[in-house]
Length: 367
Image (cartoon, rainbow, N blue to C red; front, side, top):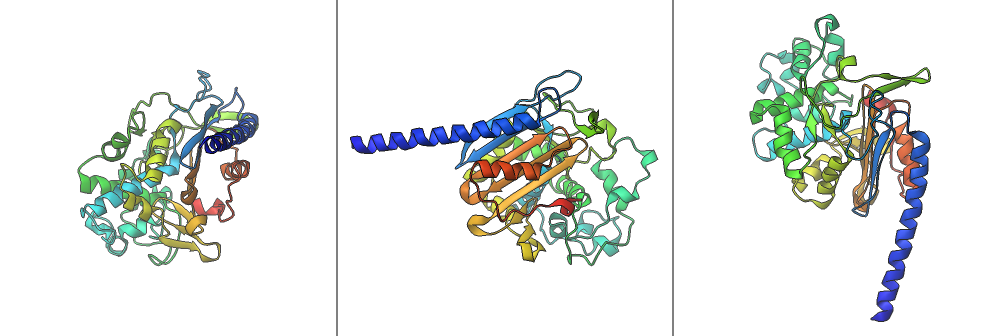
């Protein structure tokens, strides 16, 4: 028994020393990229189901010089889509809607040539072919653009980019429509629904969805890096920043880790819904074994499966990469442009000796 205890303690000390070495290497890399006097990032690493690294770098606001910490709230951009998808799947699980419902059921004034054929499932998997709202807006009429404005911009359009359900084309428009469907079915506003059914159960107490005149505590502001300087690029600087279903959530590393842990541990959230969302639902590239789930990209399969999603909105850049079989996750929230987060995550994976060979860099697949 004594020999067993000594062996266990030796392994524990060796593991802790190894993790400390990894963390020191990661901290050195992050500190060199995100310096103390510039907009920066917050990061967390979960390995074997445990948070092994969590830290903030740089500043949240160039005016106040407030430093970024793990409690700083960022706009998480398209990482919002995993929450929107979960909401839709929750309502489907409760038989309040079907993924095979045609969307004219929810938008009766939408052009029937489109809405009579497009299903909720098509919206969830970026296979609807619905036109991007950006091309159908008189920008002189708006200061801020919301999800209802997305619907109004495209509802009379009678064409699609390709035969519905035949191809993948990333669509922020589709996820704005999904948020409106959540509102129609649940009776809640989209921010209220997310608060009630996701944030509150997970105790993500400092997270929120963007609203008119909203106030986010400990908020980071987004900045574009161009010509060797930073220029603010936040909600007031971008007409389309404020749409909700595709990119409207603000959260911190501290709060988002509660979401990660709930996913990994199968607690609080419906584990069946999570499994469905993180499974291949629509093939993007068969040769690369890349698909879209519901709110997640899915690469590889079985023990080599990686689920992930980047985000981009104004000056914010974000990414989550999860390897479910290893209970491993990397999440980075950044309030500046100019850093390739996919490449950075790959370097981090090398530090932690994580095989990410099945990862497919997205590049044009998210624009």
